[in-house]
Length: 360
Image (cartoon, rainbow, N blue to C red; front, side):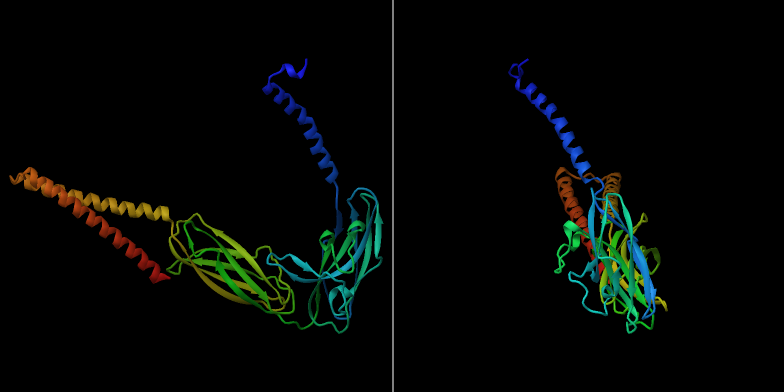
């Protein structure tokens, strides 16, 4: 049957149905093309501790998860810094300073070839100079696919897979951190939830993993809750800083000014503690509005009740107001009611503002 014998709506339906197999074929092709792509290196992190002049030996296991036979190149790079989220920032040039960790790493071979799915152990050695200063050193061993090989300028570092080295050289080292900032993401909340931002600087020469407790107290000094800061034990490199964000929420009713006190513990050879405070407000507008509305309705009800009581007392005494008096009294009552409501709102607003100023 010719397609021209169908209506435009029927032709559109047939056209859509014909596209479905093509779409499914395309999705399957994309999934298959991406399956198994990558390089795996184990272990992903090397934590070592040794004396000056020591020799550390080990081996990395490299697995080809790409399609087909691949050639890989091995090289060491220094870790220069960390971003606010704790991700390492690698050097873009080969190690040139003999007192940096990357210059101490020596691979047994400069490159390897692997079939798909195959693995190989690559020995390495770390030669620590005898005059190395005590403290922490950071570097990474990169495994780079031939197509993404890094040039001497360091281009293409982002296409590599690395094993991170955290090396501690024994000896008397300097340990110290400073809380550069401890605050909340907002000063005023309508719900009992906040995010505490703690910026910590490592002023020492060793890798620090500061952890601590944030205690939250109400305006009377009563402790209402506590949370753990840096529960995952994230580290900070020497002479760098890092931001730790700690969320807090509670199901308890909260209202007013709160104080958060952070007690941060650090140090390897000797534990030390530093503290910092910050304040924030929690004003649940919905609940406060309901209370203020209830107070206002109660005031209106009392005013109306008193007015009705006086009117009934006058009626029992035989006083019957004229129509003009009723109109005048109604108008006067409306004015007094509006004045009363206005003053009540002004007083409540002044009390609220006074509370904020007094406890700020």
